[in-house]
Image (tube, rainbow, N blue to C red; front, side, top):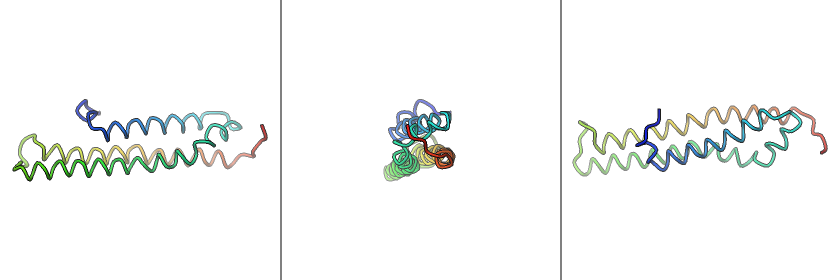
Length: 126
């Protein structure tokens, strides 16, 4: 479960919003009738692929930001014990990586299914 403190991280918010957009478009394209699939996804096909690829990269950006936070805390004398900047930075780093991959991998699979649906049908003139 995502806590309120994690929602204060702009990378987490960006991943969640981008994933919401991606899944909305993919699910819409997946559930429309077969003959409408081309119109439902056609315009967004390349953009969705790029957005899906951005999810793990946003997670990596969050990892870098979390590790920088941890190193900053270490440079200021923080230790491993207790709830401090060091442990919070490491937790943020791991969480954003996990979140980016958690949304990207199923999105790639769903994108592949939608593309297969799109490419397996004869194209009708509208």
